[in-house]
Image 1 (tube, rainbow, N blue to C red):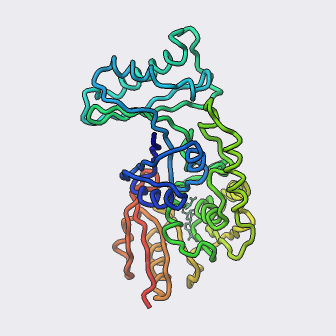
Image 2: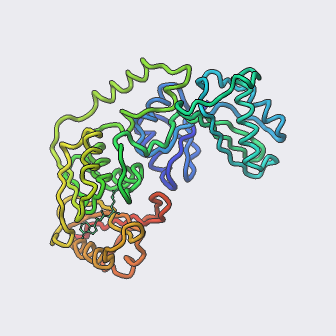
Image 3: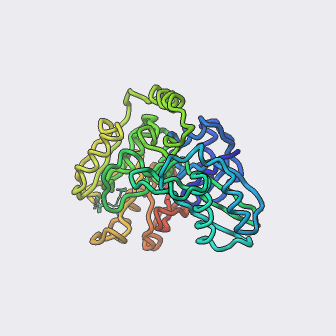
Length: 367
Ligand SMILES: C[S@@+](CC[C@H](N)C(=O)[O-])C[C@H]1O[C@@H](n2cnc3c(N)ncnc32)[C@H](O)[C@@H]1O
């Protein structure tokens, strides 16, 4: 049996490095997913510890299938009773490539009916969905008539960290922020700042990385409602993680923004994430900075959701500050006008923040 682990577009190579760092052996890396062998503890651990993954799916079975009848029988035979709680809402997603069964709505409907028959022993009158229960999500992937059935062990996407009880406008996706930090911040325990920090996502993720706080330490997961859930193993993994959190503090994380209407939400999020003591926020205009000195990683305005900023002025100022030959700095933007402004040389890398196609710019020191 194996795990299918999904991630945002083009992040699978860093997900692979992260899994190797956690002592797993990923294989078959593709743009948005990766496979890895599994045991129960790997399901719990990866869900709790991965900063990059979207969802962790358990592969239930695979078989060659070319009719809806065989699909129904195949699903009906799988051991769902081991996983599903009585009256969870069942959600089936499907995709099909180059296969005789190509209609995804039909695949979803057949698989849902077959799971219900499977767990009610064909007594349909027993079936109802309790809206209070978490969703039981199955992913069906058919390629070249090979049907693979996966069970979501994460519940909602892992980028939804437990600390974000309320959201603010234009946040960067948490696992994309973590990826940018892992990519750029070599010395995790040096000072770090984000001069356009808005809801503090970058600062909170950086502080959690610096303190070695796992992103899922306080989250709920789908596997907690599986009937074979092992709470003592789960608690043991969380206790081990807690013991490895760094309590000392030799660095600071600075967040600045010109506008702070979301400050109460950001403070609450930082407190929830156990990093409020590490982050120093100031209301500050970026144009008041005449030089940069520490690690700067930021997500400046793109002009898409947040209007009213003079983007040419902002990006010219970034470029001017980065002209210091001793400085290395990073930012992510979808603002295309930047290409016409720049004087410095930047390495760039295409990435997606939500559905915005962005470029991650790196200005390297040149002296
Ligand atoms: C794209 S948002 C940053 C989102 C943030 N990364 C997050 O996840 O919440 C851009 C931010 O730049 C701020 N901003 C715009 N002009 C600024 C300036 N001159 N100085 C400082 N902040 C500015 C805006 O107030 C806005 O919060």
